Figure 1 (cartoon, rainbow, N blue to C red):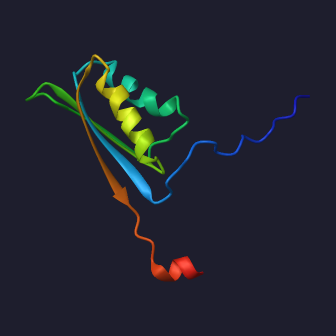
Figure 2: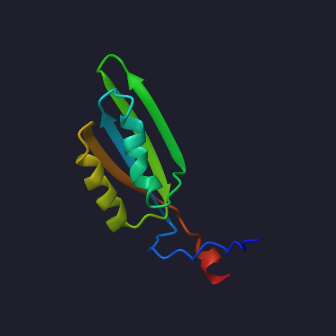
Length: 107
């Protein structure tokens, strides 16, 4: 019977207090959402939040993705990759930081 080994420890650099936020505007195409999420999945990232809405008035798919612990370099790279996709019209990025209480640092 095969023995399963635990997954390897996280090898990529992380920023535990940072959440990267991506606002993607894409063509209302059935393949747009999977193509956006593919960039996170192939890096083994599970988004903390994903929201997708099709707005018929402007014929656009709005996809908001938030991923915790991404470094600035990694989130910038993912944003550049998303912008290169043919169905993607625009990618805006922002970030949120968790506030660490001074008492928590001394504990």
